[in-house]
Length: 266
Image 1 (cartoon, rainbow, N blue to C red):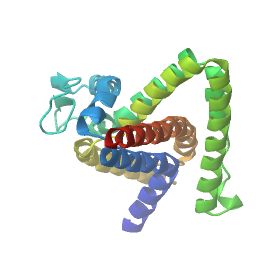
Image 2: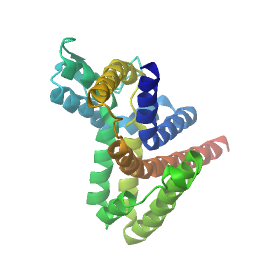
Image 3: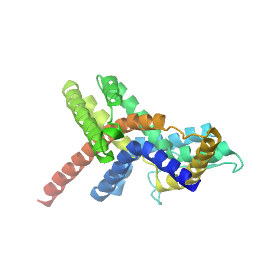
Image 4: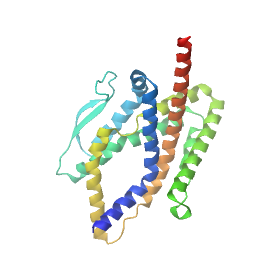
């Protein structure tokens, strides 16, 4: 039985692996930003994206019927470094609410993806085609190559496609493309769950996994996570768009700061 539970957990994690990789990349981009710029500038980048992050928590709280005790959408002068927060409570006797902790914690990922899709569709020419092209990208199946090759080829496709569309959109309307890039880049910087978010999600994840395991015992067959895997691929392709914009913003920011530093030293 323990082996069966371990197998379920591994298959569940593998089915979401496409989503985990860009999130890990976002974490490193955030670290590079924090090492490159002042905390005041970093906080300024969160003026729009932090409220999106917190509102994602709020919507998930409403869906899973948690009581919302306090909401701070953006606090530029927060002393503890948390630019926003959503404090909520729930009944430990409600399975729906306990499992909801997991989805509430990771809600900013989906809120950020939705905001990225809306910005791309509304602000740049043929933005909806850009999103459609990303969604239609296909990854190799595990039988066609190793996991590493599969991930590498998929994200290489995403990167090439993003830069092709980015250069085309830049030629069409430079100003709107720059506005779009700034918005999507900052959304990407704050769409990953915080440490506190992950702590809150952990209990819900364990309970959700146990529920799936019990369901598997009842139906006497392994649960197929193909839908989750396919969804993970689609969502990761959208995340690659925000990641591309965030990396571009990082490079531009470091370049401008370097020019400013060189000019002030003279």
